[in-house]
Length: 145
Image (cartoon, one colour):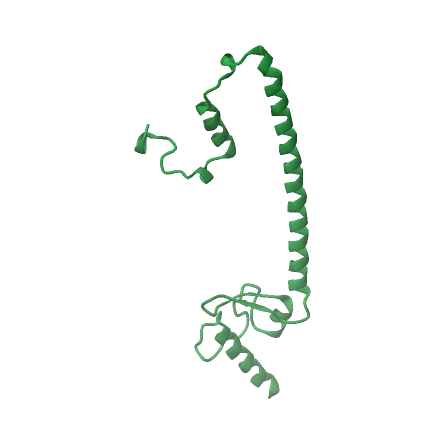
């Protein structure tokens, strides 16, 4: 089958599940079990068991690495949130996309970068770095009076 009648048409190898790819590989294997001699079966079973143990070991390592990555991510999230310094994340267009807690206390921005109190009077986009600057300038001027 080729073209649109093929169930795998338009799908990349990465989009298929590992189980599906394995089934396809086994289906195209030229040596089937009925063609194998009885003396070859113990060797095949041994290879399968070795491969299974290898996969279990790899799975254990992956789970360990995932847990370590999650702990590291949590540590950086805590560092971001609990930092005494106000921090902003600004995208390529100059829009504020995230603000940590100290930054929220010092500004009119929410965690998502949106103004929460007064809007900058300059007409600048409130989510932009310039809008943030205008809000801070306006705040400093009103608090100084």
